[in-house]
Image (cartoon, rainbow, N blue to C red; front, side, top):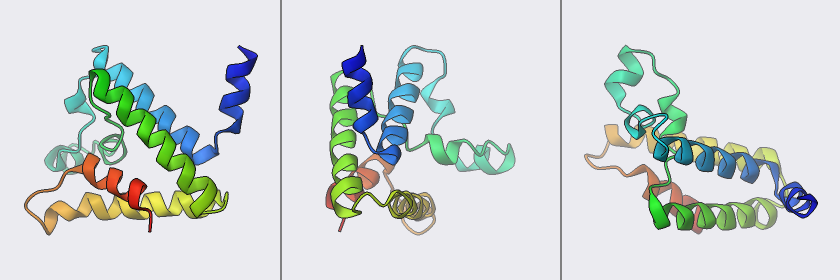
Length: 129
């Protein structure tokens, strides 16, 4: 158990929060405690019913089954590399990078007819340049 704590302590804070959120919400969704449709961003519900959590939770759905594990692993790997190498352990810069790009992804459906959150955020994490 101490080994696990040591490994978790080495993970940078933004990556830890991001991966923890995705893992937690995906497990809760798969377990049936919260339906995935309650986490997805549906603009009429977000605006008219003031369900503002959808703006954040829409980025935290990793899928189901084996693809979920792979998505979370890749999220950890690329997020960790970006935070440690690309941003040089600058937590604030990396957090701003994520918030700014996620904001752009959220407004993109107003300018394009088709937008996929997971592919877009995955591209941002992988490309990072």
